[in-house]
Image (tube, rainbow, N blue to C red; front, side, top):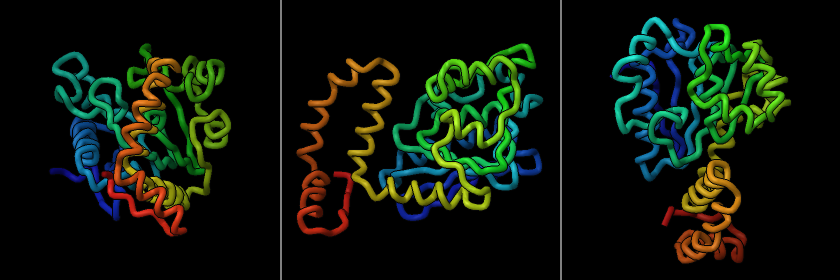
Length: 258
C-alpha cells in the first residue's frame, strides 16, 4: 500500500490524511482509490465512531490530477464497483460522521469533499474555487446539488457559474463550513469535534445521520415516517439504558454501541 493516504487511529477517531503534498495533494487514481479504501476501513470497523479528513502540507487539495484521472473517466471508471465513494455520488456512501479539516488551496474535488462531509472546519487562509465551468464541463461530484443545499441558490450559482475564487470568510458566511479558525488550529478543532461525537451513543449518532439524510434526500414526510419505529428500537438498547442511568447518577456515560 502506498502512502498517498495516511491512516491513524486515536481512541474511537480515525484520521485520514491526504498525503501527496509535492503535487498539492491533487488526486491521481491511486490516491482516489486509497481514500475510498480508507473510508471503507472506517465504515467497517465497529470501534471507530468519527473520522477526520485532513491534509499533509500547506494545501488541502488542488482537486483532480487530470493527466492521470481523465483517461479513466471514459473507460472502466474511477472507482471499482461497490467501492465507498468519498463524495457519496458514484458509489457507496459512508454511514458514519466525517469531519473535513480544510486549509490552504481547496479546488474542485476538495470542495466536493467538504460538501459531502457532515461537518467542516476551515482555516482562515483557505482559498476555494470550483473551476469546471472554465474547462467546458461541470462538477460531477455533487457540488451542484450540495452547494445549493448548504448555501442557497444564489450563493451557490455565484461561484458555480463563474468559477471565481472565494476565501475562507466567505465560505463560512454562506454556510459551507461550520467552524472558522486560525489555520494552525484547524486539525485541533476538528479533532475536538470528532472526539465529542465519538463520546456519544454510536447507535444514536447513526440514527440521527440516517434520519437527517433521509429528510434531505426524500423529504420531510419520508423522514417523519421513520421517527417512531427508530425511537422504539433505540429505547430497547443498552446505550439508551446507560444514557438514563448516567444522567440519574450524574456521571459521564460509557456507551458501547449496543
